[in-house]
Image (cartoon, rainbow over all chains, first blue to last red; front, top):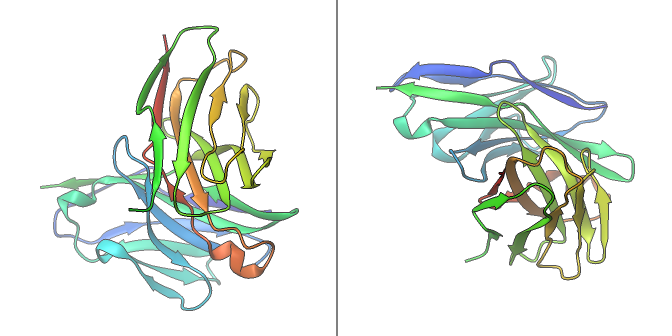
Length: 115
Length: 119
């Protein structure tokens, strides 16, 4: 069975300070993990993905995430927040399932960035 | 430009009416998906299709129907049987390379969404 938990429904940071969005997963197999961003009334855009090649994954817009198997975590970070980072972020796990693969979305974390 | 388009952007439905949401992709992807998004919740899978003329129910298929007559198109019909259809609907597509482990690496590409409101 697979599951994904985003530990914070809302995160608020000041512009120029670091961002940390937390994600824990559960999977019987080595999963693929993704982070997506969604701006209001828009579709989801891929930020980065982990596919077992390297545990530290760099994405677009200065975001990165580190896969920690021992902690079953895949937290998203950015050294310095920008106003344009204000959006909703989804952690996603994808792994084997009967007859194929199953994709499970976290409930989302809304990031607020204060000037 | 390659991508996924959804239309309309906003849709209003009267009680008892069926409505169809359009989704088209020119990415040459085999797999297509429909999700429903409600405030404060993650995306929930309605239907998916891995190949033309075949589709499978997702987690919340009741009250919805789909067709996959062409690789590029995967329309979703919200029927009158869907009791609470007001939501944001997202279509997605991805490469599908069978059951090889590498298939799990294929991210989904999303359309801009359709916001459906029942009047």
